[in-house]
Length: 187
Image (cartoon, rainbow, N blue to C red):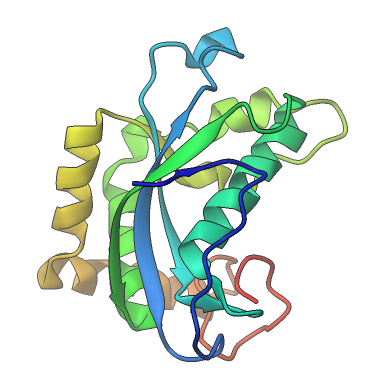
C-alpha cells in the first residue's frame, strides 16, 4: 500500500460527497515509537470511518489518514512528515454499514485502545489528535482478522445498535449522510 505522511496529497475520487457511501478502514501508524518512548515496540493501528468522497473530489480515506497524521504532529508537537501511515484494509458500503462495522470493532477491542496515551501525552494547550479514541495496540495480523470479523453481517447488526444509540444521544462520530455538514472530518 501507499505510504502517507501529513504532507501527502489525497488521491482524486470523483463522486458526490453527500452520497450515502462510506468506508470502514484500517491503517497502521509508523514512526511514533522512535519519537516517544512509551509507544516503542507497539503496533499502532486505527480503525475509522470516512466518506468515500470528500468535497473537492478527494479520496475520503486518504484525506482522513493525512489529517490524523497532521493532528498527531500538532498535538504531540513532533516534526512534520516523520511519522507515516499505511492503509491496510477498506470496506465500502452505506454510512450505516460502514459505521456499524467500525463501532463493532471499537466496542470489542477496548482493552487494546490507546486513547489515554494520546490524551495524556498531548502538548500543553493542544487538543488530542482527531480520532485518538480509535487507535489500538495490536499486531497487524490480529487487527486484520478483527477488522474482517467486524464486517460480518451479524457483527454489523450489533454495531448498528451503537450507531443508533450515539445518533439518538447526539454523540459525535456517527453522522448521517446529509446531517451536520460542518462536522469536521466528514465534509
